[in-house]
Length: 306
Image 1 (cartoon, rainbow, N blue to C red):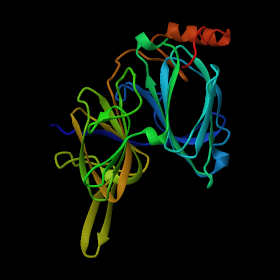
Image 2: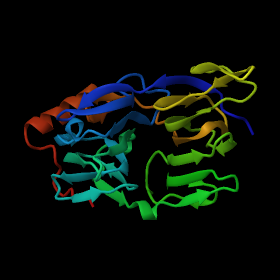
Image 3: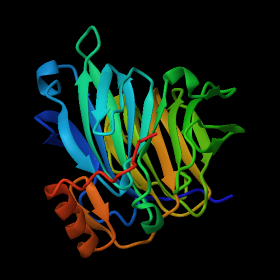
Image 4: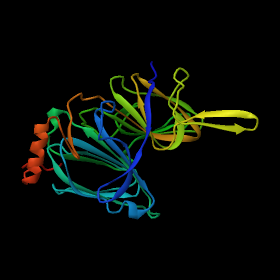
């Protein structure tokens, strides 16, 4: 077994999207070769309704899949195909836009005004770009959770892990999407497919994704504990960790534990022609999509979204 070295670490950057939603962009709208097949990821986390309630009004999608995972609050969604629903805390929506839909997402906070979730965009290979749109709405109670002997908890959204399989299926990239909590001061080794690109995104606590042979870190804090100098080499909240090749990752949780998303998928390795929420393979396909959008032919006849 080979532990994946850390290729790079970075911090999610504050930005604004939709009708004025304040969020943090984890990655996207640049070179995505290291995250292929994933194109973009946002962390929308806020306790102030004024900074998210305007939401994401009607906008187009084609050629991609959007994955929305809600931790707190709700997201009401609807589209031009007649689909409508509400994603509650703990639930996931895996939307395959395929040939094209018009879509809207309107976040609502919980009783305390808190809204927290993530949206990940996954590319579709050329053979599936124009497939019929569909949704997979998964409630939190349908997502399997495993608790290991040391207290590590893993929610499996999609993929196979520790003998369980997530409820999302039929995804071209055959991805792994996990929500992992590791108890304080615990070291855990987690299997990852050797042929997949993989990354972790920390959203609570702190930890170290390095073993003794790869000790270099980004966030280094030194403090005195009595007469002893304690050096903590930990990556914390809103840190993206990209991994090199291998079939396992190693994580050591800090004194408060760590919670992170672990995402992996087989790279598509195809050209990307990108215009906002429309992602095709060539500029000509992109021009056609924009032409369709401007001429009322973006939604294909017979598409149902089911």
